[in-house]
Image 1 (tube, rainbow, N blue to C red):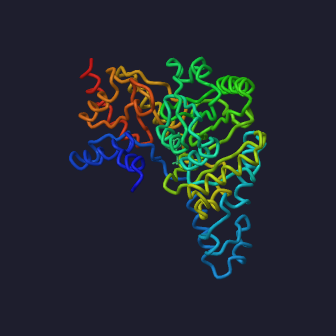
Image 2: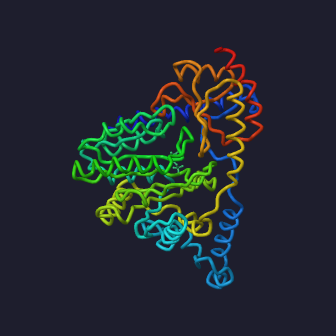
Image 3: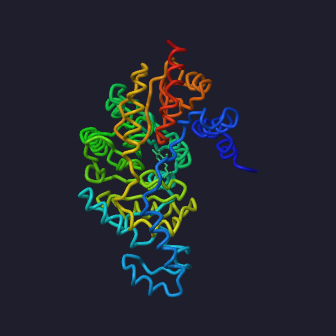
Length: 414
Ligand code: PLP
């Protein structure tokens, strides 16, 4: 017998992927330039040149007969021969790579992190899946709080950890979490809270005050229920910020915190699958948490993230793709849609615009938009009603050419 739940999950792709597939059919029918696909968050800006240059250097050193000799010439590289470069690393990743991440974080965010408490992963997706498995008991009573609108895959990972998702509503004026609702939904079964800022799908960045308020509530509730409530900060968009606001680095604000990070978006390499989990060294029993992370990684087969891409990391820390292009897209799109009459949430970062649907049913609105060859993701899949998400990690030309269709769609409703 196969696992029926897994079969169902396999058959039911996410709303985003479903739309992405529909887009492919529309493109075949109408031509690529007539279909405006804003469905998926696939970075459109090339990775920084340093990424490819470093990979070439790593590979040519490994290719040379005497990699030690070459290493001496390019002294920032570790002398890895071909077998080492393509071989297994330690399950949690190469310790030198993990230490380089820790040093970078400590310098950049005045943080106090340890390489020993970093676990390299295949992107943020496996980092989340491992962390949720490690931070819940697996005995079905655990509750995990997510702030709507949220990244839909959280629900899949929470279910896989045999825990229950508890949804907290947003304050619709700011799209920060509704803190009264948050406080009311914490109880003795609350094990984990997930935050994601800059946020997918709203583009909103939580200010330092919002982070402080969330942490204050959590600290009080930890005291009340006498057990840790872990805060997972999911940060694939950490560097994609377009406003002049400080990024509150979560381990500086809350002890029982874990960061899940990905290089997918910051350096445009989502297909290469590299990221990490960081356990705050000030967390209660941080070493035990880290061991649970190792166990959860092992139990799900997530060991030894791709070695070549591990070795890339020390050379590209602090470098991003040219995000000024996303910033320009965000302003252009947001200004033009507002001019037409759409209500747009002002984006602070990431590469998504959250726009009010022109009818109450966002699925119906998304379906209507398809008739205008506009692929917009309905907000129901992010846990709230009445909006659509537009991924603007596309070319400026695509945005400009889509505007008449947005106007036509608007005219249909008005
Ligand atoms: N978390 C959020 C909020 C995301 O938007 C994504 C991807 O879009 C992920 C996690 C997964 O990222 P990765 O590609 O690194 O697995």
